[in-house]
Image 1: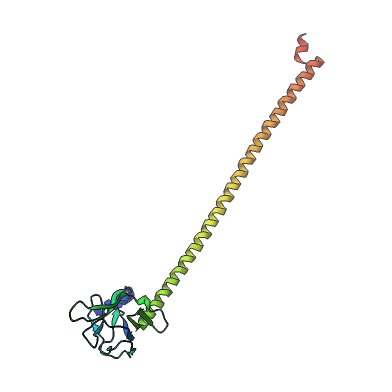
Image 2: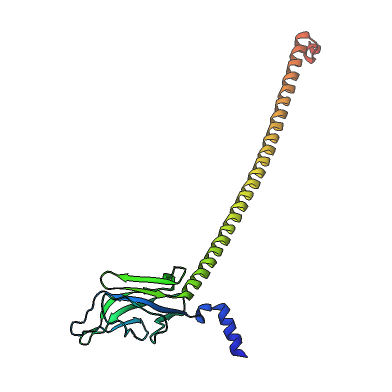
Length: 222
């Protein structure tokens, strides 16, 4: 009972470890051969760390070979994760190192068309079409996840901006109220000072008038 539960857990936690995206060779045309002494080229496909996949049907250049996916050499390779592989087409050489048609980083993300096709061509060397329907499904799911993540991130930024604006408005309102209170207190203080100054001036004016009329305290002493 442990193995099914473990597989179930791995499937949902690390789906790329259990789901395999199979790559088929749909068509191939070579434009040249590199072996001088062989009348029929020996062409094969290989990814780094994997076995050679010989293509016995490919015998002449400038001929389009179409495959149905039922050939003995199929599938060509498979992706066990979203990582790329270093792959290429080669021609076997009997005397020196094998000749290279092309080497490239082969990735699941290369399969962008709806039917899961990817075309790889290189100058005067070859033109190949690959099929990987599972790659398209994975790419669609990843795009959906990325879009959802971007949407959530956008919503998060939107709410963050709203929060910042709200805090700014509240802070501005508080500062404005504090400013009004300070200004009002300053106005009351100035008003009291002005009234005190008027009262003192009025008192001094009254003393001067009494002195002039002789009814003040100095007049009694005289």
